Length: 283
Image (cartoon, rainbow, N blue to C red; front, side):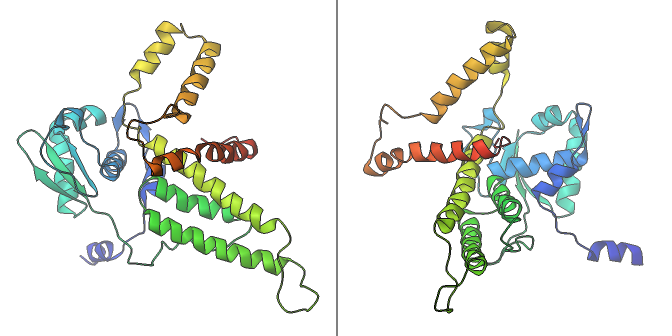
């Protein structure tokens, strides 16, 4: 009895990155950890099964609209096993369900942070660890676990701490009062943060397509390109340019705001290019 009480009282801090690390590939069948992570991703993305797109239910935050049959196919489980799994998750308080005749809306329970509070692993240490710590925060933003405001505050904290570090590392001015930052150091530091945010923005946009079906492109490679890798590289380069240059010919719903944002595409791409030159693992 005491053991069960201890298990109920002891809680651990776990985020989606942790569950992503834990999930394992065991043949085609998902493990329970993998299935739970799939629900986390679907709820974060507001996933709606294709044939439910016209359903009148309006999803709220942290919800997904699915069918038991679809989950059974994706996870390679029996439908009864899927139902039992969801029953247990709901019993333990990790999900809530709104049932319809042929589908179910699943609300995943996420831990929330009060205003101004940030997860404990964002330590604010600036220096050689900025790449690791800031990228960790941006990864949470990419996955939808942190809002624009939360990560914006974290970026601001890193910026302030970074300027302080740069000042501390610089020689003091002739008066001996305040440390001064070496010329160009602040600009380079700010650019590094902006570069990382731009890469995160690209990754977040790409991540929105993770539930789309890649079959057509795979068939294009096998049938049209006949498995030729050089042709694949050429085709991929052209398609990537089409994506990056989307709207170059002017959008139908053009406005002064969208026109202004369109002028920022070239410097945005330049930032990505500079970052990629230094880090080949950009994607």
